[in-house]
Image (cartoon, rainbow, N blue to C red):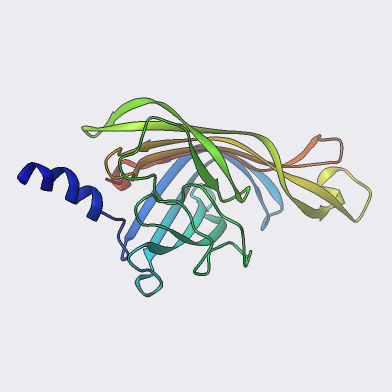
Length: 242
């Protein structure tokens, strides 16, 4: 009976919490971005991104949880706020898969069809490819198993998600910024990058993350005209999750 209790009960009862509260920080050096306040391109700067996640207990139940996340990107070199974003994610408390319910939203989009993994990977994470929701592209992208690694004595599974240049929006900009005689021009917003996750395979919690991102604006021929953000952000040792 003791053996059955150990093997069966945890698998049936363990769920992601309703009242989660975490703050994680990622830092990067030698990064570049377009400073909209100074209307200039900055390069060689140090940045940090702070992610604050809080569970909405009243919006969850025994089957699903709802988390609100606020992300703040800051240029340490020039003491300049770069941008911020918000999200509300509802997900299955056992699998971590996102659900279309409970006010799910990303940024200013009132309603976005969501699927794939959100905050967490599943409990008992497998050595396989998972679909992870990308909050820039607003769709899931594959995160492929890429081996194991030990972080602070914890054995983790590494997953890597690679995104080729992909358009996700259109942005009007002054023509003078991109060498045009027009007062304003419309440019496509493109994202490309590689995200690596080191996941605790028992709990499904990403212990650490590295995000290599490149966002730029391109004309109708696909030629890059303006770098919006470029660089790599990595979880700081002090905010590694377990």
